[in-house]
Image (cartoon, rainbow, N blue to C red; front, side):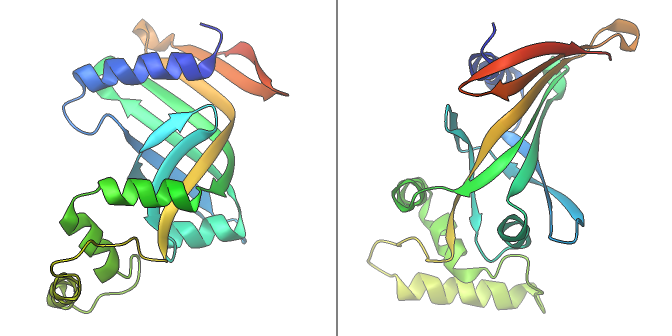
Length: 191
């Protein structure tokens, strides 16, 4: 396959069939304006020709990093398949409609949790968060839980995508796709 997005679809489908947990889990690496890197696991919630989509609290540390430095790297590691995919690119906000639609698809408790959490901020004790969750539950009792204004999606628009396949004796296969205008150029990397 010479289209990295088609290849990614095929690899993700294989991971969904073999990974015991969260085949859509990806490491998200960001850096703030000073260049301080940070990495954490998030879930891929959509992908296609526009990019790779995840959602978060826009007051979180990752969101602050992306506001200061709108570039990110993703890493999918599928241990059961002995494969990984690296993605690097620029980041933009998902549309409000896209964020609303995904938020509405989440379970009620997850939506309430988005209202209750000051993600990445210090928490004095778990009971404080639990009380905030109960307050959100009471606030929206009997009604739909709307998306909070501080919560939404991000799209990583790939500029580079590398597919790594484990091989015996560490003689791995590495295919690199680099965006070239509206298409891609493909090459190999030494293991």
